[in-house]
Image 1 (cartoon, rainbow, N blue to C red):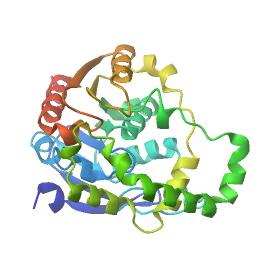
Image 2 (cartoon, rainbow, N blue to C red):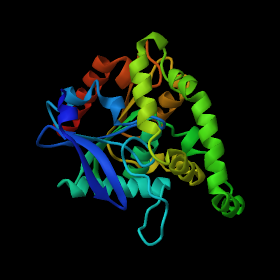
Image 3 (cartoon, rainbow, N blue to C red):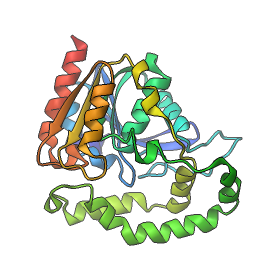
Length: 287
């Protein structure tokens, strides 16, 4: 049993029962934010090694994994907006006894990591943005305001349609994240699918989707003064390498690592290279 499995826990944060794993000790605290359609399982190959020199927490983001999937409510303040997700990250950090953290985000997890750092710079020590969606996808998609009331009123219908679509294309979507498809073992793919499709998962994912809006992160990058590491898989087909190169060039105080023979998930395909890059970054910002 890995350290991560031993430390699997639940904690109430901002209306969600968050499933998380915590290991290591001391500072810094490293928060791992997985991408869409995945779960904290995505960090299984790097979690223990990172925890050798830091406190590390990975959690299932809202609408994914074993974290609860409550419906949005003003009374409970449950929300799936990107801003609410960044609020949740900060609340979680404080609830486990820390004031600051290094945020490590992959894909849409990178979107949330950067948004959180921009909104709460005093609570973030540094950023590791791994194949992060900043100029495309989740960070720039937007559901028009005029159509939102209709979408909300018809949520059960649209959630049902989304369930059919995701069920049909899930395997193809996840496989696209890998450069070398043979590295994605069938049992891992099955486990990711099981992590996603828990309870009323399609309704929760619909709530997440319907709250997307253009975060205009590209317009806010230059205000960032925190040290940052940008990591990209050389052959990422979901967030092109050129986007990460652009991000490293526009983000002040940043460095770039291009991981060869790798797609959208360096922590999955090239875990050793990922750990080396992150550990080097953590050491550099602690000196």
